[in-house]
Amino acid sequence: MATTASSSSTMAMLNDRKRKLPNTSLGTLPASEREEIPLPTMKNPGENTGNTTAAQKLDSESHVDVAYVAVDGGDSTHSPSAPSAVVSVDVLASELPPISAKERAVQKRKGMMHFLAICWMVFVMGWCDGTTGPMLPRLQAHYHIGFTIVSLIFVMSACGFFLGAMTNVYLTDKFGFGKVLVLGALCQTVAFIIISPAGPFPIMCCAFVLSGFGLSLQHAHANGFVAALNSPTKMGFMHGSYGFGALVAPLVSTQFAKSDAHWSYHYIVSIALYLSVVTSSSLVFRGRRQEVILEESGERGTDNEAANTNKYKQILGLKEVHIIATFALIYVGLEVTMGGWSVTYILEERHGSSNSGYIASGFFGGLMLGRVSLMWLNKLLGNRLALFLYALTAIGLEITVWLVPSLIENAIAVSFVGLVLGPMYPILMLHSTTILPRWLLTGCMGYIASVGQAGSAMLPFLTGLLASKFGIASLQPFIVSMISTLIVIWAVIPRARYVPA
Image 1 (cartoon, rainbow, N blue to C red):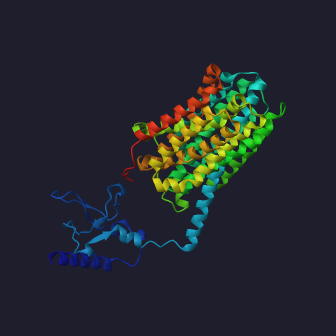
Image 2: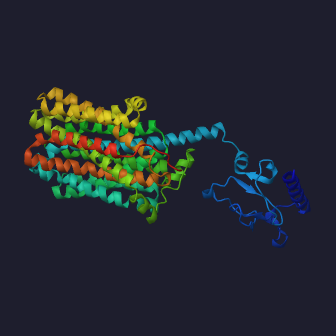
Image 3: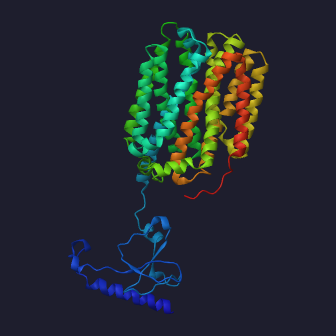
């Protein structure tokens, strides 16, 4: 009863003051006539209560759900029986105008445009990685070089990837999501312009540094953006579009690789594709930051990409990030190694024809199909158990490629290896969102994806070194050992846990 009487007295005094005000807005009152309602500062029980003003904002980081109102410095206590004495944040939020069906439809349409632009960019990245396999024998023949020297293109790409991984957070902080995407696509465009005339091999290697840098930025932001949507389906389709690009590229590059004089014209097609990526990214994202783009489509925008040096130190200080990045490095390296060196393996060990380049298409086709068609199995078994199953199946299939001297069997087995390897990377990216801090998620995803892309250069280079010493037959035991390493790392990665927002 005492609390109710106090509440009634408080509201009566507020109404009395309101009646004394002239009929005008506070913004037009002289400073001497403006009146502030003192509010007590909320402190821990037992502490004295001080006064603040009604202009004080609620600190969102303190998770305060109610504001206490008192007049003339009087004490105020929270009581469920005195609802008139508190102002609930939920009540204030409920007074905001709801989003109409038309506005929601506009948001969905913009969100779909953003997602399709990302998928198109990832498709072209898959095209870029899928090109390498059929082109390796042609590069060796054109420049008269062996396995070790031709593998330098992977080393140069690794340099670009590492450079992208180290500068990604800084560039994103300074220029924003949209501009960095365009920068990555422009780097790719310039790289292919340098490669297309089939100039000296050292110049081509320099171009691959630029290509690796651009790919690193694109992979980082594509994964970070789709991870922020918190949609396993979209993550699967985005990585499926990468597999589709890597599937189509060998079908085209194999035709160019058959020509002694015009093989490098294939990169002119790549130039056109990346110019389309520059155009689509510029028109859809318009150089804006990620949180602005997400809010435009009705998603929760965060300030994740306003990363500074301190946040970068936080990212590098998380041991989970380095474990996941190591998994990504080996996995992405396996993808590119199998898509690239499998063609050479079939040509030399199974005496395949010039059409052996289509085996790379079979591998990447399986990769795409696995990422889209096995999502139901991931949900049924759980991501953790599913990945163990996929890895063991891939090892069994690779052993058949290693031991069975049949071109047809090897081609089919390689395609099925792609099928079971496909879902692993989306599973890894989704699992990352369950163990990494939300406020660091975009930066973490960028770092993981960039380091992972470095693997697409390191492992193929190691394969080239092994092939130059032991022959290309060393490819299969190397792949089996790397997949086994993935099983060990996956067992070490922490299980899903509660992550504070």
